[in-house]
Length: 304
Image 1: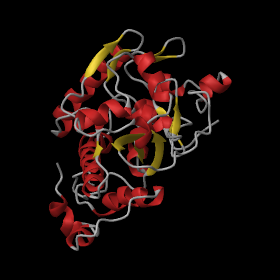
Image 2 (image 1 turned 90 degrees about the horizontal axis):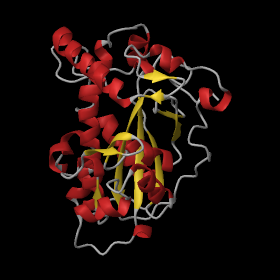
Image 3 (image 1 turned 90 degrees about the vertical axis):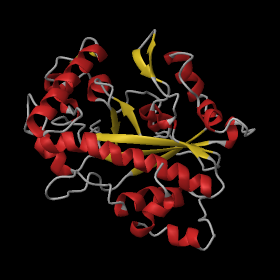
Image 4 (image 1 turned 30 degrees about the vertical axis):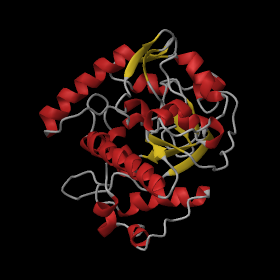
């Protein structure tokens, strides 16, 4: 876990901790500031290239209630192995007599920077170097961000956990959706009003589909962000108007079609190809694709 002391020299918050006066995280604005301050000040926010470019700029942050019925709907659709916020919280804090209505799910979106999108937009077969770097090193930063938010809230008296970092988090096979995870941060973002799904299963947000997301479950009460949609495909041109399908045309692995949507098995094969390319071309261990997220009308905005 990222220690508060380790971040102290790069971040303003630990000065407050030193005075033994935990910050007040009772508002959506204060938690959004916690997320953004780490993005702004952490040295881990880097592509680790010669220019030491940042991986991320400004985040979108939203909130959903732990007792929102949508979590039981997700569980019903995906399978019994899919955690609700309460289940993920109890795994981390088994002795806490918490109830679902005492929990808030904090979700954030990290939109890709224009320089990263522009580089991949030009490609048609192999991913660009910056895209691979942000997928590998940018996600390492996102992991640190999850840990930092959870640790900061816990230290302030609001026990919190990042479900995707739990030791028991894993991928299992859903009867309906194939390979699925114990907890989906994209679905958490959908529940928090941050976006809806597209033909390729990517989440289309106010800053577009080229992004990554994160989530923390905390025992704290923050008003839920309104969901300005009822259709989980509301922002996708293909589902809303029967047009576009550009993400299918962009996919070099044929993993997306207008007939069947997203083929997870074909997608995994393509990711293996990109991992081999990343290692051979740039000496980076990890994969990076993202063709369906760039060069599309939903790359940087809601197109509907």
